[in-house]
Image 1 (cartoon, rainbow, N blue to C red):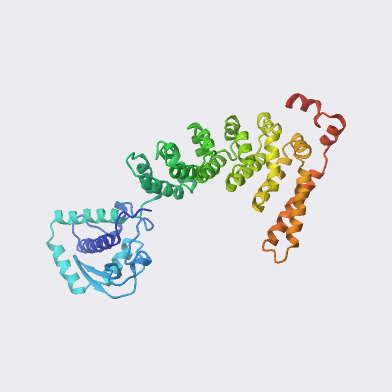
Image 2: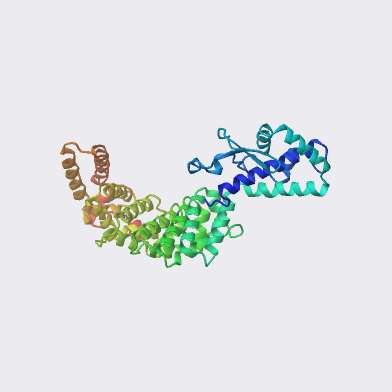
Length: 437
């Protein structure tokens, strides 16, 4: 996060604030008009113990080098700073703790002199001191997530902001939108209106900005129907799906991540995905031989399995899987990948697809030859396990267990499959024939 004040500036502001607070205490203790007990000051500026961080010394390992002014703990009275070689004090968590430290480290004679000066102050001078306290406390206040999001969003709205700063603003938002309440605030046009700003970055010429924006949208959408609905209304899904076809691997990967997050557990998102050619997109990613990034294919396999698991009881969405043999074949063929992580994703996808519909099972068995592919995979794992000092032995055992589970599923013939073999009707009843034709 951006640091609005340098360390030296913060130390000086902290020292000045302690000094003025001591004056405030002296005013209150001497019954000066307008200055009551210290707790009133906190309430008047909405002070909480967690809302402010009072830094007494160093904020980071880089401040421990010799010769740095930050290495000195200041004992403060009036405007004078006395350097002392002492251990680093703990951070202040409240005004009270700050004052206790300040009084404990103050020179009693100088404190007495300051008390006499207080007696001579006019009400106008005292009110000025009070205003200075508020101003300094505001400078030292730890900004809230909402404050930080507002800053980042304002940066994105700044058309003259350099690419590096725009990217940094997006990286900050990526962290800030993880809590669901923050993501909702960013989506709320009446609050922060941040989605509009982030969506605008998808049209940037710089691939790194498009990539970062897709990451933010994906993170904000995770298990968040409010943001998912907002993004669908903004027409973001087709734009992200187009980005999946980018020649820049990182952009394509982050775009598919965002697509998956926007439609997950969201029926309206499923429908929009299919209507915008989602099945063709997945098939293209999984069947491409043009050096498609392996991460992209893994995400595509995960999305296929996820959609199968979350399938909604509507004919259109079932048909998307049931009728596209090309997609099913491309999923099955990923079991032949040289990458075992990809094989695992393919096995999980097949396991999920098995439960979609009898016609899907039939296509995978008869057209995609999934049982033959699974036997080949079995032989491959047996060969790997026979090698001495196999580093991935445990992972291979887990994969073989998963493979065996999937093979058992496809090895069973349910009633509909038996009817298909006997009648050639695809294993469907008369009612199913009417519905699915």
